Length: 159
Image (cartoon, rainbow, N blue to C red; front, side, top):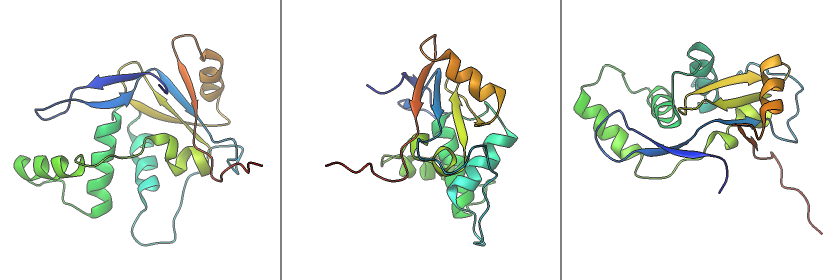
């Protein structure tokens, strides 16, 4: 088993989803930057990692993994947030019929130098690799905090 997992309640009725708790995802070993870089895109539509960045910087420890995925999906697809509850529930149900990668696979810790912290109830915040908080999380590893690495950008060559 990787990390500490806990069932978190969904905002709507039904079975809870999985999310990390008391876990810190450090930047990938092959991350090209030494500090947290604000991601930018030349495309008109924002990619998912930029939406993740904006939401997590503006609202640290507000979203759990499932809520973040849902909010990013709505914003990325341009779905109006003022839809009725029934429509949003159906969109959410359809979205979670398939699996989604965890934030270890996000471009934030892989390419842009952002560590991802899940607190004791699974709420998420990001910290630049250069920050004192990032270093504190690394020092807490094993003491009530699970430390994981983001997925690498490139596969390691095997012989």
